[in-house]
Amino acid sequence: MSDNKIILTKEGFDKLNQELDLLKNTKRPQAVESLKKAREMGDLSENSAYSAAKEELSFVDSRIIELEAKMARVEVMTENNHSATIGLGSTVQLSSLDGSSSYTIVNQEEADISKNKLSNKSPLGAALIGKKKNDLVDVVTPVAKDQYRIVNIK
Image (cartoon, rainbow, N blue to C red):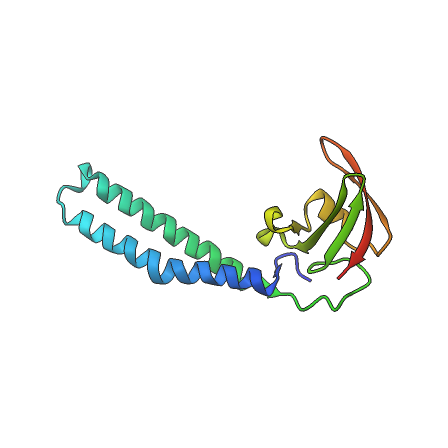
């Protein structure tokens, strides 16, 4: 795997695609129209609406370029096939002194802790990669040292 590749779940890929579609087909045309209307107001040197519209169009164009560059590097992961070891796409059930928790290991591009999607680059995510059921994992963060037992891998 090349370091330039961005490995995403199908859901993460679809989310990026939806954002790109929204920017290209809705936000950019709106920004162009706002710029056109502001330009028609006259003196551009003192036209705050023109400056704001120009800035918005620049932001939208930059985001489109950024997303297109990402999309060119995306590789959609295949199903994990219930591997015995943890990798991208694995859903992991953990137990610790604080209780039990479950996370899906994803690329940092689609990590969202509120949805239990844990980045493979986070301290816990990185510690889990390559581990197996019943392994103990020590995770050191700036504020604590925690130990987890891997209860299940899907």
